Amino acid sequence: MQLFPRLRLVPDKTDIPFMKGRHAGLIVSAVLSVLSVILFFYPGLNYGIDFKGGIVIEARAQQAVDFATLRPALAGLGLGQIGLQQFGTPQDVLIRLERQRAETAERCRAKRPPATEDERRQRQRAVSEEEAQQCAVEEVREALGKYQGGAQVRRVEAVGGSVSSELFFNGMLALGLSLVAMLGYIWFRFEWQFGVGAVVTLVLDVTKVVGFYVLTGFQFNLTAIAAILTIMGYSINDKVVVYDRMRENLRKYKSMPLRQLIDLSINETLSRTIGTSMATFLATLPLALFGGEALEEFAVTMLFGIILATSSSIFIAAPILLLLGEDKLRRGQVASASPEPGASTSP
Picture 1 (cartoon, helix red, strand yellow):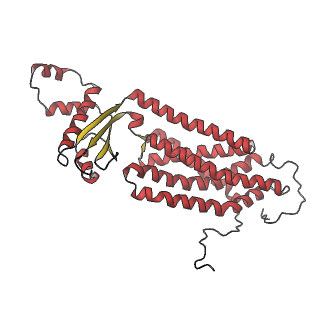
Picture 2 (picture 1 turned 90 degrees about the vertical axis):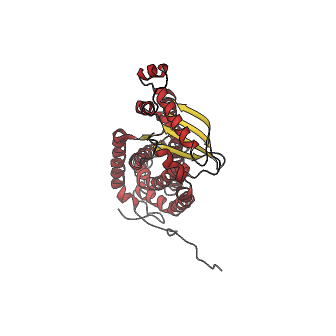
Picture 3 (picture 1 turned 180 degrees about the vertical axis):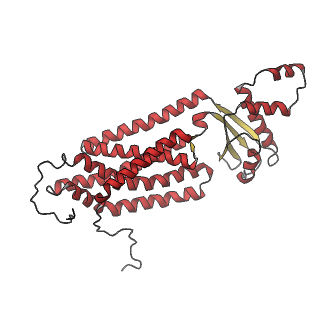
């Protein structure tokens, strides 16, 4: 005897003609991806320190760091976007500064009048990039010295332009290699039509995630690359489940039209697809709500990616497979055969 009935997001048996909306799904997806590519070039991504260079400062306070008071104290320095992250113990904090320009060094020079002749000569020289970074570190050091009775700077690292460019290249290379690996895996496990459909869908998904980063203004850094790779892995897993059922039904219903077979396969796996996506969504939601700054952007992007991957498996990957395999996956189809059980008879 069950005290509480099982909660079902969708019925066990559905007969939704998804392929009737295949053209609309493909058109909407293509338009969103094109707009995302345009946004990538203008106004562009908000690159983080990993990809555009900057300064990382590790500090330790006398007591647990209160980010609500430390953030405005550092924001008033005029050093641009500042990222704070708990590092190690509650007393440790990681401060990320964007790469400083010459204005920072000139402001420091104006605050400190020269005391010696050598300093006067040095002021006459052009402001160097290194001087701007050193000035920013000194200003942060002074602000930390006044915070909670004095915080100690334990480590300072500067990420140069060449290092950030290399990190960006390696991140893009990781995305490209993952696409190639997934294409090979799907091609080996299924037919080539399945592989092409999955990879094209993944490319469309990735472009939409990039557009999401532009619209939200989230920092695009190595954490963003990790989020995109995670979304790609989740998305391909979702598509493998649907594709596997399609392959089983191709063997089981040898005379069913491919369009009806795809609809049947999606409906048979719909409960599992929605249930898994909802469980993953609910597991990620607390990270977005209570994870703090360190996890908020990653978790919100994951929530968007879960919805995107689930919808693309139904409305993008399946129509692409129908487009590519209508004449190849159903060679020798018997047109006069009676419809199989569970198949839809709608045109």
